[in-house]
Image: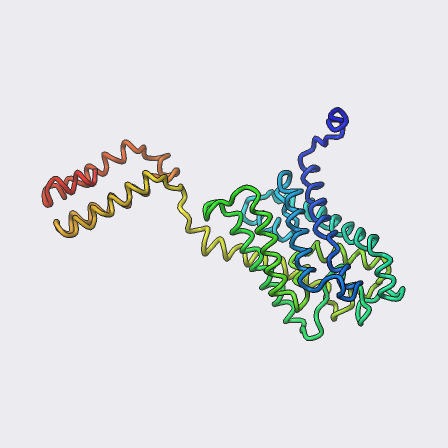
Length: 343
């Protein structure tokens, strides 16, 4: 068996990544929770079970793909990483195509599995709207109360919040997560979005997850109505998530991640910083303004010298000689104790 597996091994890294992305989204779409609830007319689940199925499908899809490709499973997330310089632009179209194919075949699998149930529920007529409509099993359609601009805003806001939280989960400097917890939290995030933002249009959030199944329903018998329904709604869950995703990503970067320390401090460095701040307090009580100014300069420079870029130009040993020179003037005015504390 091991010999057979070695012969089947794909050597191309990008092909392996695309297969992982395809399979991850295939699992996400193939959960079939909506089909079970709709075709049973609510006797085998309700709105909450649909959201649980979607969330858990995402969790296991991420577990499948994360070790190979990082489990993007969403072209919006891939685009955001490209904008941040964390993913090669050349991979973006390949990942997006993999997502689209995975979603298309995932919808086909759900249709195959629930074919009899769908035919019985709809009376053999595949409809997009009405009490026996089944197209909503596979992709999103706006609720009757939702206007065009309302739907556009809904998708921009929902995807912005979704991507903001996704980027936060990936931010190691904002508190690293235990291994294996990340997919579970993404699933919890999807569940949160579903139970709080799903009534307008089903919170697509993912262009491939909506377009792939829509293309399948188009060729499987639902026809052109899948693109005409909702006043030509079909393009909103494709375009708006990209706008919202970039907005949420940049919001997190500008308000949170941009303000992290460049080089994390060790416990010893943090203790030294606390001791220097205590010296500032003492020097403020026992010496004049010049001494306090020198101590503050020592505190600032001691933090600045820890930056890697700064160390390329000034060695730490040289830095301490600079601090010594700065301390000479306070020695003359405030005595030896404060200056030795600086050193």
